[in-house]
Image (cartoon, rainbow, N blue to C red; front, side, top):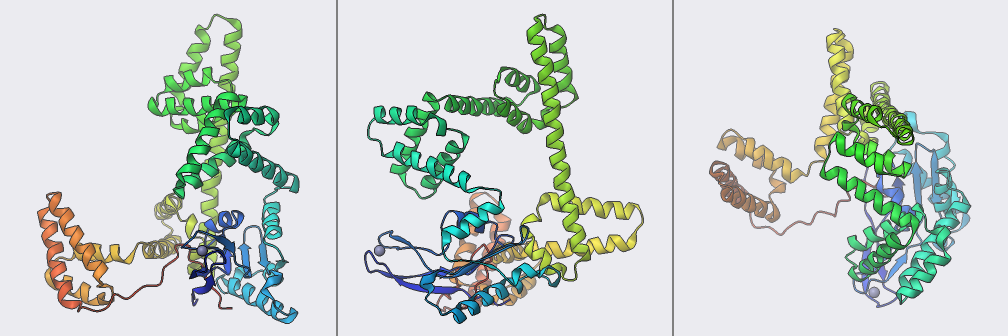
Length: 462
Ligand SMILES: [Zn+2]
């Protein structure tokens, strides 16, 4: 799997600055779960000039692959300026690039004939359609985004109020989601002015619309539960809340509190309630909470099932390592817990063969997860764990290419940190490692490592 970072050299059409950006040609949502969000946000091969901030989209072909949905979509813009033959070749190269990262048993036929799109937008619509999003829903989203834009541009509070009143029907939870996304983005990009204006609009909406007041009440209820996570408080909040969605969220977040004791309290309240109507309300609440709890539990069971399924795939795959690498994001704490408990059961049942196969999977996953730890950190741990100076020297020698100026500086900072925290012994150990490392790392120019993408994207050479 040769990973080649393809760079595009560009000249900014706005200020003539020339710069280079990495080009993405293969987007695989299993290997890079952020790919889908980036695609939908229009950020694939988006070139932003470092000098003036001018943004433009590169018209470079790419393939989008979602194995769960069996989607293989190729963006092949007209402006790529290729002949028919060349286009077919480029499409073939892209689907082969995806295939090469797949275990043999997952190379399915849909990859051989990817769907081709001339515009970025039509490809995005296909991805949304696979999620059950209809063109009407896309239009509804667009209308809301447009309304938000107009609200932001309105220059006076009166103008904003008028817009709110005229468009009451569009101000729903989905509008608030768009607003939240915009806030997050403005915050992440450090756009203070835009952030401030978004907050103004949000405050106005929370105050002036029915949906806004409902959402504000929801967030107050959640905060109250966070501040006082007791059965009593949860019960009070559930009784007070008039919105079923808010109650469901309260039960989901407060799930550890929803136990036998909780229902006992609720039952006692029902029994001591003299007002007929209020008692009926409490009884309905008890039913509702039980229903939500059952849903939450069913969901948890489903998640465990999914991990067991993955485990079975790993046990039966001919290329477990390739599979494990592809499904890395799913190898979370829950997966490891499930795996550990399966190993325990096998051991208890005295099934040595299953146990050792599970153990193999465990070792494989651990090895892959360890690779994800930055190598500097790994080396640091090895140094600190070295029982004597000779071992330390060997560790350093084995890792000599890593003894860069940056790593030496890291050691210096660590030494200082440990000293400040009063961990004198560890500080001395780091100091010793630093001394040794200095003798081994002759002054040499800092080699630049290519910027590593956390996404693990595979680049195809065009
Ligand atoms: Zn520019």
